[in-house]
Amino acid sequence: MSHVSTAELIDKLEDDDAYREVLTEESLSVELARYPNDAPKHPHSEDELYYIISGSGTAAVGDETFSIEPGDVVYVEKGMEHDFFDIEDAITALVVFAGGDESVLGRRS
Image 1 (cartoon, rainbow, N blue to C red):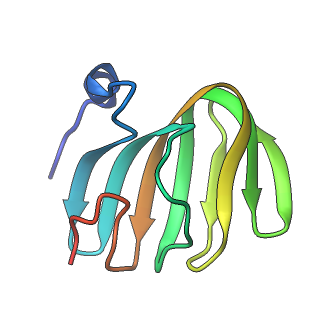
Image 2: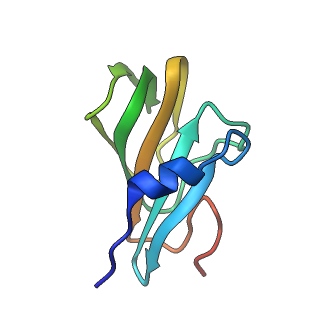
């Protein structure tokens, strides 16, 4: 079992630090992310789930776009193009990567 305080991680997430690892297990990786950020955007080799903690803007997943706000959940199928844009308030999201072998931070093999 693991326990992590996302509130403490959010406090440690600095303006120039777009991602922070929450936990990593064999087939699951959880990260805290802040948008906008300068990290390169590319599809991942695993499914992703974004839980929007704070902020608002627009999400694009494949050919679909929609507004997002705190409490929303965005699912991105592996290999799908996706991005956040028209960000009104900086977005902080808990990002769950499942069923693959990578993470944004690249700490999984």
